[in-house]
Image 1 (cartoon, rainbow, N blue to C red):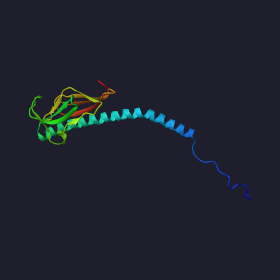
Image 2 (image 1 turned 45 degrees about the vertical axis):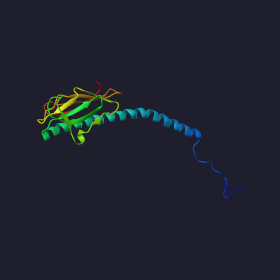
Image 3 (image 1 turned 180 degrees about the horizontal axis):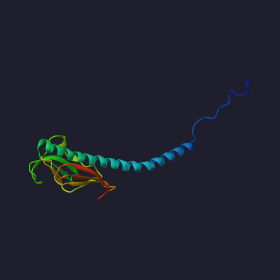
Image 4 (image 1 turned 135 degrees about the vertical axis):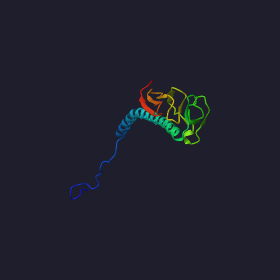
Length: 169
């Protein structure tokens, strides 16, 4: 029956929604976008991990330099490349083979290197002296996959530590 205003009250409107084809196209577009973004995210994460690790090592060296002067002690940072770890110790003698004991606080804990990062130090350890001097020391901190990284250098006379961006060996 038709109403007095001329429209059918029982007329059904088409259902609102998406067709299966439309949903499949959207899913395909999303898959392509995700496929392109995952490698970029992986590279960014890898670079960020390298940056944080290099900064942590530089901070430990800077701490050792400042603590050696402030407390009048000789401090040494050891790098165990085979065990992929490093730690801060109090040195009893200036000679590298001299006796040393790990610092008892949190800075003396044994820290490990993340996977995918390698160190190429000029020596297995660096010593900081109470008069502010430091051993000549240089180290490359490299991302194994991309061969980019950071270069850490100590100033012999002031004991200052510089962290420089490096692009491979």
